[in-house]
Image (cartoon, rainbow, N blue to C red; front, side, top):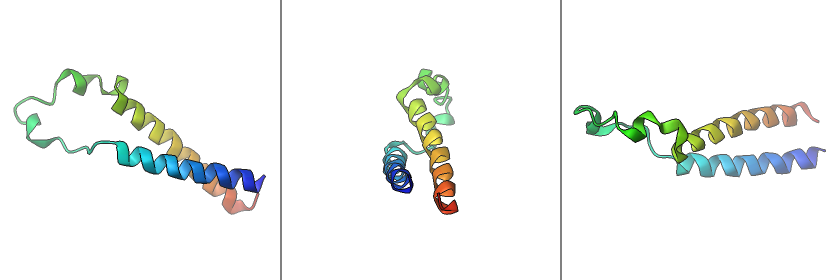
Length: 75
């Protein structure tokens, strides 16, 4: 069981790293000064690919913490 959890933990680590690196930065730039921040993509970010990446990253982060705690307990 520990071997299986370790393999899943390694896969979650790699996937989390790739997803974090694939996301764009959160800096708004100068576009928000002129009102460019309220575009269609700014309002519907949760439905876009970037929104999906954020959701998957959150899920993998929770899974990472849970697996790290379980593996640390010695199961």
